[in-house]
Amino acid sequence: MNAAPPLFEVRDLRVAFGRNGVFAEAVRGVSLHVNHGEVLGIVGESGSGKSVGMLAALGLQPEGARVTGSVRFKGQELVGLPRRTLRHLRGSRIAMIFQDPLSSLNPVMTIGDQIAEAVFLHNPDMSRKAVIERATDLLALVSIPQPDRRLHQFPHEFSGGMRQRVMIAMAVANDPDLLIADEPTTALDVTVQAQIMEVLADLQARLKLGLILITHDLGVLAGHADRVAVVYAGQVVEQAGVDDLFARPGHPYTRGLIASIPDMTIERERLFSIDGTPPALGRLPVGCAFNPRCIAAQDICRQTAPVTTGAPEHTAACHFAFQTVEAAR
Image (cartoon, rainbow, N blue to C red):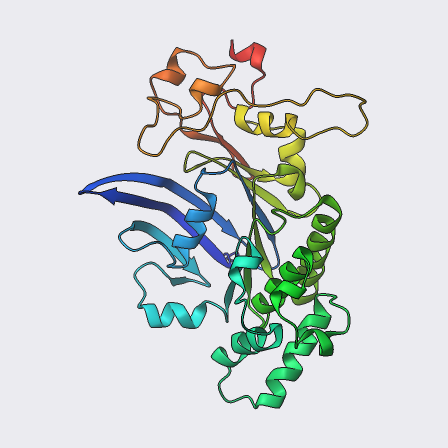
């Protein structure tokens, strides 16, 4: 019996931005997938291409960007689809929670009107009363107290965590099959971050969603993701189940990200950081993109780009994948 195809599959996705006819790739051959009811974490530093890649996969790339590769949702190819068809899929079958809920919400519209708009756009035959009832139910679903009163308030009357809950409510308004959450805990304090992740986890389990969590914090994914894709300089450098990734990281970059997670059991711990900065767009080093920052880099790393190796359930793009620093030296 053939295995069921992934809910969402990206193959060799490339996104390039150009000026005066010269293009530089921000996303360089990303391949990943998420199955029905699965949580996939995408982690990497700011500027690594994780958000740009997912936006481009949904046809939300800036004007003039060049997108190639394959993006399939339930077997349907999305790259090259007419805008109207993509608009129908976005917000109904595929939904996205964008960064910074304050700038994503309209400051002069009530919360109720904004949620109602998200419902009505994909359900034009619903009555006004039914749409408002649905909006009230959605606020209750994301644990906002007194939802019937909160409907009539404006975004500035909500806290940061409550605004993020509103964005989640809007995203699941039409019962999507796939939800992409782009940095859902950014700019929130630790307590509110935990609450938002609990809301997402509860909705994912209750609605059987495929969920993609995009973040720069590997610690956020530890208790929530089933699998993790680690992105560096526009490429996926490691993919694995979350438990296996933490227990046996195969790429030096992944090991650096794990080491940078604070250990609250150690007093006065000196926080670890990866030396250097990510390469600028269009100025990638020769060989492995991570080699200028890697403590295990050797001559081959500075000359030849690595290929992805490992078992299907755990892969890494490194010449010395799954080796310790001492062994690599």
